[in-house]
Image 1: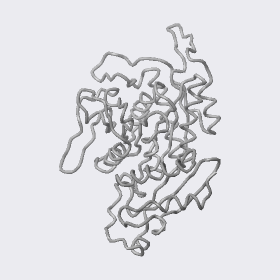
Image 2 (image 1 turned 45 degrees about the vertical axis):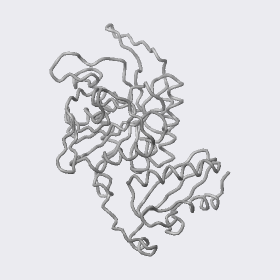
Image 3 (image 1 turned 90 degrees about the horizontal axis):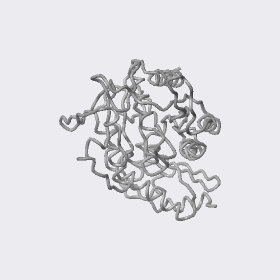
Image 4 (image 1 turned 135 degrees about the vertical axis):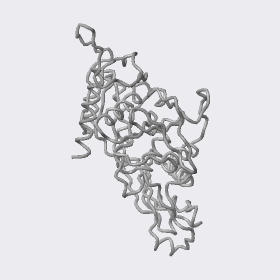
Length: 349
């Protein structure tokens, strides 16, 4: 197992890109915690929320894993002005994007899953729509950059508008949306490395004119890869909802996403079990994927079980049709409304 001194020695190889000194020299090594192969580090830089931060993040993770760490958690903060001056800092510290400012009142909710195919994006767009119907100002960042699907699910056929140096998100059902899907043609694949993904996410936070939001939902990619880690680092105060199916294996894998959230100081506010059952016209319920996975996962993560979503399909008729959005009076739409009310109650009361 790595020792704290070994971690400090490793981090001394990392330089603050603005100050051109090691983070050991700048006093940027703020906290080190080691437990059972997991290394948690807090680092202070002259500037945070930049593409360079993403590169430093990857560098630290690679160095610590090469030295024997099984997993690595990272948090970043800004050096205070006096310390930056002491170590020779000369660049101005630009303002953090308003959306990520400590003064911003927006509540971030990351929607995560351990694996693909559990309906995480469907849950995201329907919770967002339900919150909007309840009078909340809501946005979605489709952070599943390789598997973006939110625009199609919501039936959005317009693109964000660019005015000057600001991007204005697309909007439907009262929900503002940003997605990689708006920036590719003909459903082309995205073939990018980690730092580029982090830069795009940073642009979504910093260059988009979101206005005042009560809630910003982030549809994370499945699993615990680079993008999920970037989001955890960018928004250390984010809340998180874990989506699973009733199947024991799906719930077992989803527990990894929950564990990652807890290790990076995100608060898991609940578990949603999707595809819980199929209800026939006679009212009989068929538990196609088994029972109990969501409740067990919530118990394992010591959090609330927010609800069960049955298998279903939104109504096909109507001008406001979207492939994955349930109407307010649809039985499944009513379940999402109750889940949204529980979320509001937990986070605002």
